[in-house]
Length: 201
Ligand code: VGL
Ligand code: ZN
Image 1 (spheres, rainbow, N blue to C red):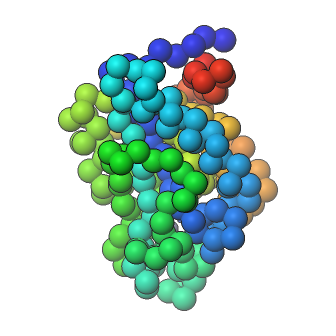
Image 2: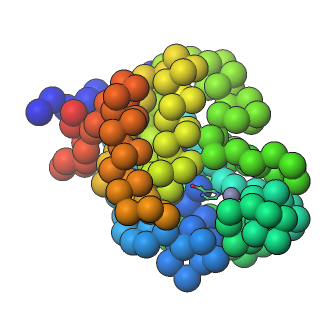
C-alpha cells in the first residue's frame, strides 16, 4: 500500500453525477447514490484546504437534445435521459462541486452519442493546456461513460487513477461492471482507493 502524493499535474474528473443516473432518475444506476459520499470525499481531497492551492476538478454531464439518437423513440437503446436544461440533467444536489469546477457537456447534438468525456469536447486539449498529466476518474456509469472516458484518457496519454468505490455500473448484462473494470486495468488504469482521506494505490 502506497500513498499517492497529489500535486501539480493532478486533476479529478467526475463523470455524469446527474439526477437521471441516480435512483429515481429515468436511467437510475442501482446504488448510484452510494457513490456520492466517496465522490464528495475526492472533491474535498483535490479541492480541499489541505493543499496550498486547489487542484482542478472537471465534471462531465450528458447533455442531450429532446430527440437525441440514443433515446428509444429514435431507435436508440435508452429511455429519454439528461435532456439539456432539465431537472434530470442537473448534477445531484448532494454533490459538493466547487464553483470553479470545469463543466464538460457531451453528446449535445441530435445525431451524436458520446460515452466518453473526451469525445468532441476539447477536454484533452484543455487538460494539457493546464499541465495535467494524471487524472482520477469517478462517477457513473462504470460500464458506459466511465469506461469510455478512461480508455480515451489513456489513449490521449494521461495517467488514469481508477477510484473503484466511487463508481457504479448500470449492468444491462450482469457482470458488465466487472468486465469494464478489467478492461480499464488491462489498458493501464491504476486502481486506487480512499483511505484516511488520502488516495492509496
Ligand atoms: C450513460 C447511458 C446513456 C453514462 C450515458 O453516463 O454512463 N449511460 N448515456
Ligand atoms: Zn446519454
